[in-house]
Image (tube, rainbow, N blue to C red; front, side, top):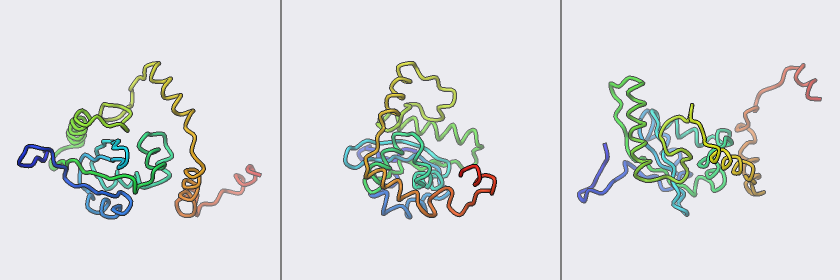
Amino acid sequence: MVNTNNNGSFVPAIIYKNADTDKLRILTENKNRAGIYQWTHNESGKIYIGSAINLSKRLSFYYSISNLTKKSYIYNALLLHGYSSFSLTILEYVNITNLDNIETKKLLLEREQYYIDMLNPDYNILKLAGSSLGYKHSEEDLLKISLIRNSTIHTKETKDKISIAMTGENNPLYGKTHKLETREKLV
């Protein structure tokens, strides 16, 4: 599972040094491959750890600006700094051949947790791999989340980048028309 060199040091499966210029390679080379990935902000060294049954499908989610408008430290960082400020590392490819869905998810979450424990990622909000469904935040955590959400103020430059990124075909309403009754309500 974990790749090591002759010294016993950890060796990632592959490193894409520029998530912007390497986008096509990232999506092509990881199609239908399961594994654990790491986003790294090159300047600060802050990281995010994630896992996916289909890395290409999951990673393409990060390249969709409309998906990045949801609240998440890593999404906000990608929007703020841009893809060229990040590298993407495939920490480990996970062989899920002959595993059912439950076994696959369990194995991926175990491997993701291993890396979260080992690398202590800054951008992961929860330090437990997997869904936060059913997770109960403490009052202190809820206050922190509220303060972060209410203090998120984008610079004009970031707002302009988001605006440009959401124009044309990237706009979720591109090519769609409202029904006559909806248009009348909008007036």
